[in-house]
Amino acid sequence: MISNFVGGMIFGSIGFVAFVYGKKMAEYKCMFIGLALMIFPYFVSGNWPLYLIGTALTLVLFFWKD
Image (cartoon, rainbow, N blue to C red; front, side, top):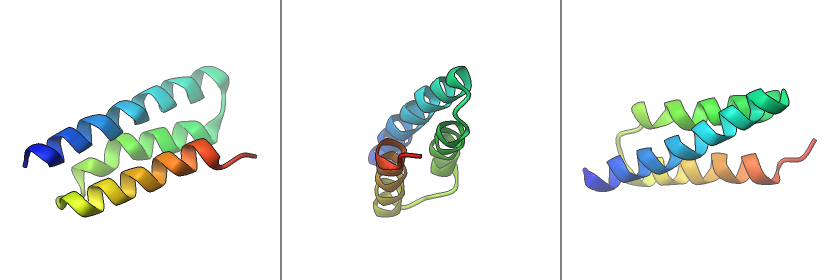
């Protein structure tokens, strides 16, 4: 329960920063991944899926170059 909350806060915070950065720089990829990072913890209930999806989205955010 607490690890699910902590994971949601971590990935939600990363998503918020990515969304604001993407909006300021007009980078839509960054905005959409940030939005996905903020929203997906509400729909994932298990710890392993939460951390796997969050880590994958964060890696895509940092390593997917246009």
